Length: 248
Length: 304
Ligand SMILES: Nc1ncnc2c1ncn2[C@@H]1O[C@H](COP(=O)(O)OP(=O)(O)OP(=O)(O)O)[C@@H](O)[C@H]1O
Ligand SMILES: [Mg+2]
Image 1 (cartoon, chains in turn orange, blue):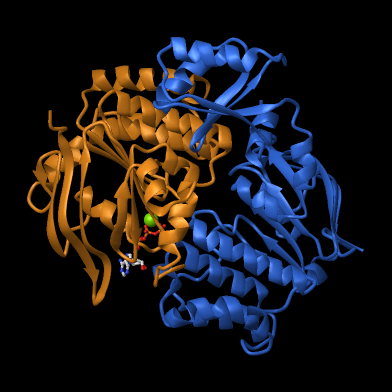
Image 2 (tube, chains in turn brown, cyan):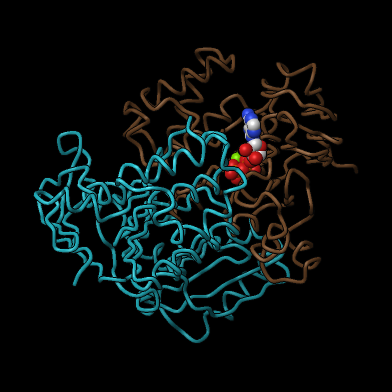
């Protein structure tokens, strides 16, 4: 049985003037997979992710997301994906409930669905006591868990997470990964970037981007074998140290 | 002399609804590299803002090189360098303009202390005409560090300088801190990355405005209360689920390639018994080993 491909890209590129932020990347992601999208600062992760979400038009190349074309069918794509941007993706000055209502509305959920799923989500995350509080007053880790749940309110096929756990405490960071596992078990594909190398180990497969190109792509186990090292951190060092744009 | 001395410092916001700092006390020695290790929201930024005299505490005392943060703020501001976690650069100025601006604030020219920042600045110099807003993570942090150093401060306050910075640049960043320390600079640095704690001489673990523990990294690791083990099997997600059902475990959580576990009570048979339980539950390729805790393990333990 051939696993269903929910993301397929061929030579996908993005140029800013004469600068190539994303250089002909080609890869596939399967249904239910937790796919780690790694790379040094400036490697082009956010740039690529925005194209995959239909938020920024590619300069060249092809890609389909959940079977839809990223040039012509961006509206269909947006309905089938959830996106958590690198900067915080909820409204700080709205309460937890108001955020759920607002985003539920955007995703086209009915009033009844919003109410039902919102309640479910608040119970799951243990946010009942703070449901009426401004999101801005919550600890970062809670905000991120909430943002994840809001991004999956409409039962998307794929969730894109851009550095969801940066700065989050070690316990909450692990709770966040429990949400990712649970989504994956339900068949949702998770596409995630991180600078925590322990989190790279939690992914089914990992790609490592260097200077706009994908330089390695495999399971963490195979990557460690390929580079003859013991940890994903060492794999990352092997590849990223050669980067020209390091620190960019 | 103590570079920083803090005695029972407290600060609350929103009419007491948020206790950002709760009777925090510690000191940083001259020439010491001291780490404040804790997640976002732990109170680190509030502490930095008080020590840099940008915010007054509700109660408690603090001095920086013997100067009082309430009365001697002009002297303190002249002698410290501060790299705030966010928004420290002018996004619409170029790299070079930002640096010149910070030098001029202290009545100096870019060239006066260039030797101090040379190593770092050379890495970003190729982009010196790029606007700061267009730089990405690691590069912004390097520029911000240069800006905080340009007037050759005695004491450097760094608030989460490596959040969002990739693993390679983080390592480089800490190399730079070591060099600055070697030149006699005192450094108080905060970070949510537990692995960076090992690079400090002493650390304070901080959470919800309270200090959980202060010691050398080795000292904190020594305080870990029980033996700790790492467990691995073919399917790590279902292994975690099985481990969570085991009553005899005091803790279990994912930790990179392995899960870490500790037992409620110590008994020679327990590892073997657990192995059998896991096998009976259908797990394959099980391996278990005793390990030394890391700072992250200690933090998780203290958060319980
Ligand atoms: N709108 C833009 N105009 C010009 N250059 C840009 C623009 N957006 C991004 N870049 C450049 O493209 C490169 C890739 O940036 P991107 O944000 O995709 O990196 P990243 O891999 O997400 O890095 P980080 O880990 O720091 O988030 C960087 O050099 C960045 O400066
Ligand atoms: Mg990014």
